Length: 249
Image 1 (cartoon, helix red, strand yellow):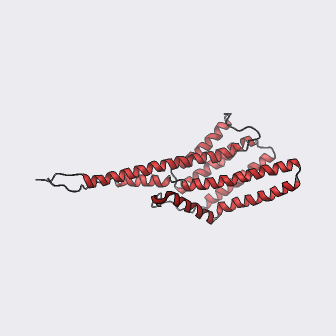
Image 2 (image 1 turned 90 degrees about the vertical axis):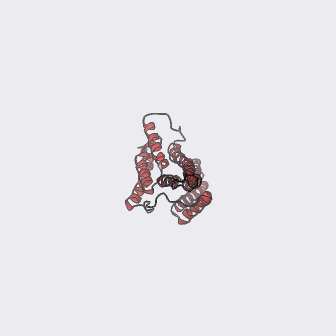
Image 3 (image 1 turned 135 degrees about the vertical axis):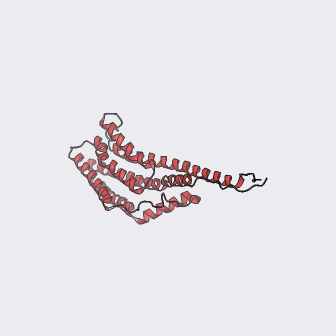
């Protein structure tokens, strides 16, 4: 009896499949962005609340100071949203977090990272749409309680387009699905809204809350996909190294 290495190994297609799923579900980059945006939004919300209170109380010095600080905070939010420096910092933190897992691309022929011009225009239209909604609220043509369904009309399809062109995993689709479902439930009269004076949370919590849920689901799934990838690869190595085949007489 003589032993020799088996020519059998792990299925390359299965390895590629789990590699792709793992790559599409690495969401720490999005989680860092989420934390940064929520932090700045919270500051803007607090300053806006202080500005409103100062205006109501007739405190002009505090009001004008709050307006200036609110303007600075708003432009800072725009800067971190478009700054390459911010993107680089977020990327470096992401690489540090994954550490020895290294860099991986979702697909060899992944879609271009540069979005088509019509998609960028669609994002701009979405911003204008929400500004229009704020105007409708100020003139009392739209109640703040129904801003979330109003937002879902355009935000859901825009999110779907962005997810498609970025080639993200299934986890990302949870965001528009949950956001759209939330809007439907509100219109159906399901009591899932915040009472006055917390109506603004009716749009803030669904936007960031469902986004966080999607990101965390993606992260958990990436751990599972990585485990499956290691398991499949290890099984293939064990077969190659340990299997014995009897020699033909």
